[in-house]
Amino acid sequence: MSDPAVSDADFRTEVRDWLSANVVGDFAALRGRGGPGDEEVGFETRVAWEQVLGKAGWIGLGWPVSHGGRGASLSQQIIWAEEYARADAPARANHMGENLLAPTLIEYATPALCDRFLPGIQNGTERWCQGYSEPDAGSDLANVKTKAEIDGDQWVINGQKVWTSLAHVSDWAFVVVRTEPGSVRHAGLTFLLVPMDQEGVEVRPIIQPTGGGEFNETFFTDARTEADLVVGEIGDGWRIAMGLLGFERGISTLAQQVGFERELDATIELARRHHRIGDPVTRQRLVRMWTGLRLMKLNAMRSMSSDGVPGPEASISKLFWGTWHRDLGELMIDLQGVHGLIAEPDGEFIDDDAYPLTLEQKLFLFTRSDTIYGGSNEIQRNVLGERVLGLPREPR
Image (cartoon, rainbow, N blue to C red; front, side, top):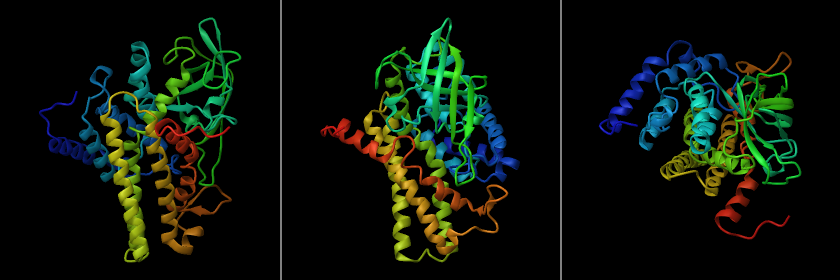
């Protein structure tokens, strides 16, 4: 656990000194690249960076010491996020593993599963993707149709997942499947851990307007995984899946804010460069962005300070940051005026036949999806209304 004798000021100095000494060379050249809409930039360098972080003990900072973490306090985790943003370090390459799956394993999995999978996440050698959404089960996750059946000491999996971010560069997937024939909705689902490198798994990239292909559709055709790679109990997959989403919508927001802070700083600089910083309307929008980011941080701190798995109130976080990020993307484009709507000579070509896009344009295009993936704004409002405020259910 974190050493109580180490003050937050000393911890900040330790973090700042370490980042200064290690964000050098190819790592410094990335200048924080690899965020939303930009994930494929410098990917191999970012993978190498993960292993540097892991070796130094900066992955799983807040995990319990009993699970290989440093047991860092809430304030120290915040300090790490702040200094990481200030150092302009590369965007992280295993958000799904460290911030979503790992807390879920610690909360729900057997010691054997934790011992098997947490070290690979912590040392930066195993990357994960999420197998939740399907063509007919996006925000309505309970409509999952992908099936798994026991065959001896293995599960055999058949079905299709979509929006499996970074599946093409992932070693493992955590997948929600239907294991009880004839079951419907929330019943009969199981949370499996599935290796991606096998003949029964086919990943097809979905090329986006940003030129990236980090979104994918994934097909399971008699894919296999070991019978004991179940998180929680067989048939209890809905509870585990919702627990993971609680971490996604609550605690992991703090990690996302590393990128958000950088993007907001870039937006303020953009306003200066285009001589808009003195415009009252622009200043009001920038202040709203700045205030929103602080509210996000306070809400993440509240989530992290509570015991156990975040409840349905964690949907507040997803609803807020998704809308905030979309608005930031719009502000970036608006600040550039007409130049934000046309290709730039110094932009990045997405393929041989396409116009070059600037980083701001890529971010704008990507943030259109922020209010949809991970549970659309409409779904989040329903969750908050029905499960938090106790309002009548929406007619079906």
